Length: 319
Image (cartoon, rainbow, N blue to C red; front, top):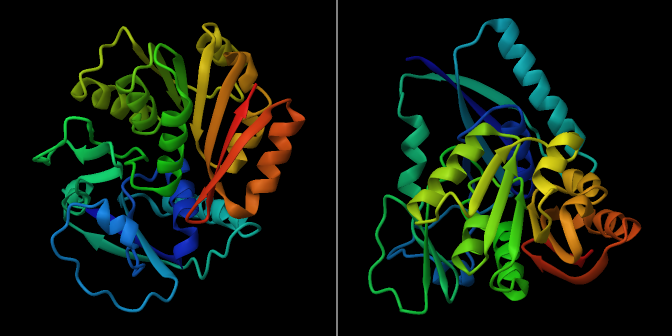
């Protein structure tokens, strides 16, 4: 099968947000190339024997993605939608040139090529996340090993935003609580919540691929379907769907998504929460911290803790 390869030039600080724009437009399997050196903390959390020398990091990143051959009209419509989404990011982050170069490939296995770069790593001293196709030896008894295959869904656990959420989840969740994961991606947050002792968890995403990935990842981690419900839908714009999800109120809601979604979500999420429940959010770039703080406060949340990592922000707030 013939595929078209597109390579988008942007900045390292914008890669996550630009990737989000691609995913929102139905473009999955984004490959990111940059020269950002690993921190000492990152190196300690990765199972790598040798790290090659990288060229100097000049703040430039290349995002490659693949699409089946489209008609010229369909391709233009898709690229116009992508560029419009990127244009909206310019108020918050330097997106760089954002030029797109088109190529062609016959490689039908491109969707799996990224797997060779993803290895087991430590979220913290007591949680290891490993791809389903890798093995980890000599695991301490007090360490939780989570198996994950994100497929084309976002969320492998390596990113600052996911780690921020996991840290707050571990800190505040009590055994036996019921948890909701909004914008679940691979399901990593709700799956870890269940493995750490949550009684039940529900997860939602607007992307059917994410829902499928979350269901499969729950299965490989031994989680039964009677304690884990995953649904496709939008809890912000669809009041009926929100009622369906939140009819059974939750002790904790997790949302590792962009500020642009967290802000409107903060206005409706209480409908799905028990009194005094916690709302843990991440995926917020530093520049949007005050916007999210304002939205949470105006919607009656008590902000309990704000944490930062690598230019990203997480809020823990009480309803």
